[in-house]
Image 1 (spheres, rainbow, N blue to C red):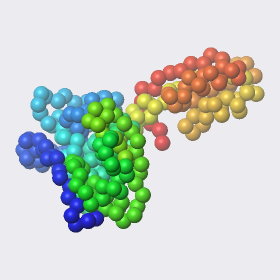
Image 2 (tube, rainbow, N blue to C red):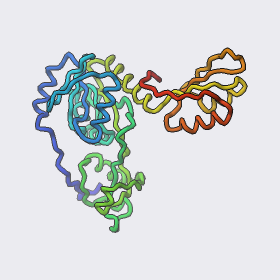
Image 3 (cartoon, rainbow, N blue to C red):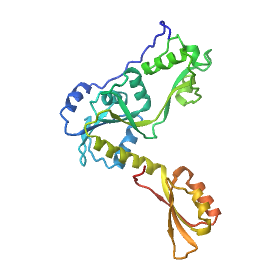
Image 4 (cartoon, helix red, strand yellow):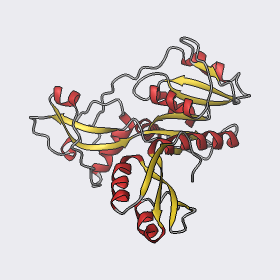
Length: 301
């Protein structure tokens, strides 16, 4: 990258309570520490995820730590941008934040044998793109044209890495996503630096690995339950092969014999987004008594 390239930075806002919080965390050595966003676009969905995972807590007003009632766990409410640092340095064991903030942390502070972040789960919400945006009516059409120029970003390390790779000849990922805020500002996207969703991350050496696995399994179960429904129906035995191509299940459908030997009952998990189409296809091929049931929670692999 050109030595003249500079990256003016929008100042990061740290919580005034972080120094006090850091000292408080050291006193919770009998609990696994789990960092979650204290506000912002991921906050509400994180709380729903914790509730679905039966992580019971009460957060007192304005306090950034909540003790979990039914597990040896403490929730730590942090700005989402600070969570990768706390997890990477081992000050907390688990965290939920955006993949973009994890990428920024990793670009700034590469992990070692004792520090760094491990991604456990893609939580599949909070989707967004970190994009290169330029004036809609300006002369810039490709990110390569910005190499050596000044840019403004709060993701300084990730942006520097991205433009360095461009300068070294690596292809840019084109992006044409658009949003109301961008259009209102007279901007257009010309490339995507990283596509982000919320992720569950862990430090490399958590204080209680078995509890980390339990929490990850619970959260995975909730995510799976949100994606799937349980479809149950009756079908003639001769039509079973065709029916199971429509509802193959995650591993295989459950098939049960009925009193009428010519018929069987079938149960299978079906993705919620395609259940209507699956029901149409089952009806068309002669399946009957088709019932769809909401899944509250799961344990799947």
